[in-house]
Length: 111
Image (cartoon, rainbow, N blue to C red):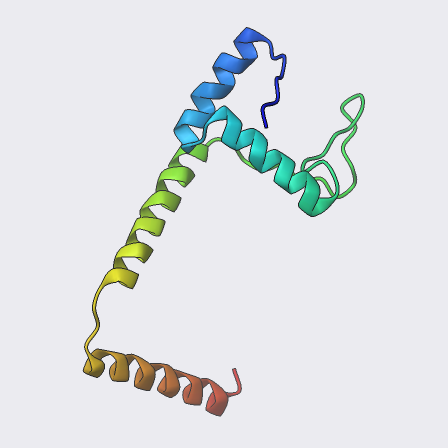
């Protein structure tokens, strides 16, 4: 299905720059927004009048957004790499033994 939206040219251009940094297309971003509307059964961000903020509003720092995105992408790549690595049975047994030992130590200390 095709949907047409009327968007100010400057707003569209500025938005596409940000979305490109996030690895998203305009279509992908709109799809994410619509999925969140369905999932949350609400607009997925706070809308208020005259600068009024709801009592539980906590602004999120945006200063390091690109850096946080790079960190998230690097972490995801590391996780994929570790999952793709082939483990020997000895390595798997050692991981299980270490996890069991850690659990026993926590149970013995009451942590």
